[in-house]
Image (cartoon, rainbow, N blue to C red; front, side):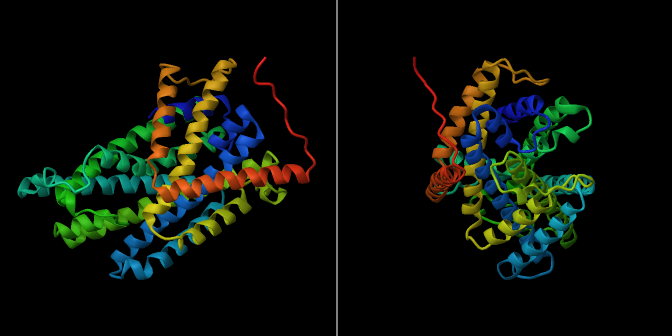
Amino acid sequence: MVVALEIGELCSIYPEADGACYSYVFEAFGSELGFITGLLLYFSFASAISVVALGFGAYLSTLLGLSPDAYGTTFAIVIIAVLSALNLQGIKKAARADFALVVIKIGVLIAFVAFAVFFAICTTASANILSAAPPSSGYGSIFGASVVIFFAYSGFQTISTFASDVKGGARSAAIAIFAAVAVSMVLYVVVDVALMLLVPVNAFAINANPLSFALQTAQAPSYLLEIVVVGALIATASATLALILSSSRILYQISVDHLLPKVLRKYNANRDVAGNGVLISALIAVVMLFSGNIYVMAAISNFGLFFSYLMAGFALIHFRRHGRKGTFRVPLYPYLPAGAILVLLSFMVGLPNVALLIGTIMIIGLLMVYYFLKEVERKGPAKVRLFK
């Protein structure tokens, strides 16, 4: 919630910025840290496309009676291609499609929760919540789950990538960012409780289609399973659509700031879409589909998210110290931003080792690329005196 407030204030300071956290870090600290933050955030979104698309593939396989392991990746590639084509038609068409998808998926989630409550009332399923917890239970498991679930809230940054197009201006966009996180949090908690009403806690494992698994385990009516699977298809399609849109705009903004080649600045003003950015995001997402475990993919995506949120917190403090004011402001400053920075650091430390390793390699690699390109362009080093 605090990160959403921070992004909201930064969005109100720079409503024309299309690069989300990257733009705020670039404006606050310059090209070096902006370059690293922007590309980490971009690859985070691009890999998130793969994770969500795999979820779509798993649900569609279930609906068609096919094996998700055999056909999930194929269906994921198809949905990435279809939604990339939709994004190329322009932001207005993509936004209208996404709005319709969101309304439908919320209705389906409400139906799923209603069935779970009915199931619990008619059976002894309410005991599932109190059933034996997995062997790894404890505060460490809660922390580990928190690190992973953070991935599910990454979508709210999408709003900041087109704040200038939001009716009511930057303040409305900032409020929308906060509201999106608040509503999503309520829905996630309610759906999680519903899942535990249907299936004992210790029966869950890493699963690309948990709603189908829960309904099948609870022997729900086949029509309800089909409705929920269709809803899950819509939900994952909606998220994939938004991630392709936001990642392409981040890549475009980095190029506009002359930190990436000119070819990425291709932009259709009539459709308000960065075409080459959409195509590159789709290509990277397809490649990431073959990178392995969905948990690891989400963890790698989280590294970029945590890093960008961390830098955004520092950017907010920078702007406040220099008197930059937006139309939306974080309450209890500086305590909330400082607390968020500490929590984000602890989350980053708690990421899986493979995510930390890959993230660290990416930071070092991006630093090397940045200074190599700087040397090629014969740009002199910036010399700053930190102490008197």
